[in-house]
Length: 234
Image (cartoon, rainbow, N blue to C red; front, side):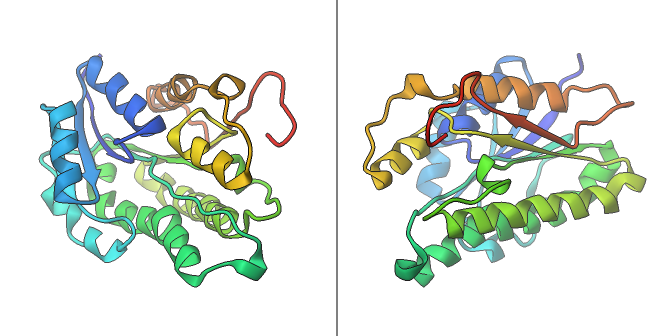
């Protein structure tokens, strides 16, 4: 298989880190987006062959012009980064609302726009790693779920617009996955975290890799990944 070039957000931990490792191990080229120079240095140490670009997803304007910084073409754009802060609406801080919308929704929209010329040229694929919270919203999840519902709508619109240009768009909806973010969620919920209860990052990565490796005659618009035996609160 010919190596591909992937642009990935969120490669510093969780699903994004597992995905970047999997793609690097098979010899693909990586372009990683880091929120700060210090973070970029950390990623460069982990992935010495990767191109690392600095842009803060919490400040989506820093993504303007990023497409021109990428060395070479782009076969896939993988939106994996995300942030979450749980709170009931009565105690929802504006700063937390704005950060979740910026990182989870606005930044992916801007980055997708920036890389459309390369993706059209390659007949590439855009993958949005959404969440089960992008399909249904529960108490205290208003801000995060709103950002993920919005991401779902953006992906649907992008898919409809880009089909004539040969760009495939897929959304993956993982249920609770054993990541540092999930550990933080459990802390916010006041629950004991047990990674063995949840989907592994590698399982989600298996799904992502299957989507991006599909032959050119097919696409998977949406796929949901859930535990075999759902547990209360999943």
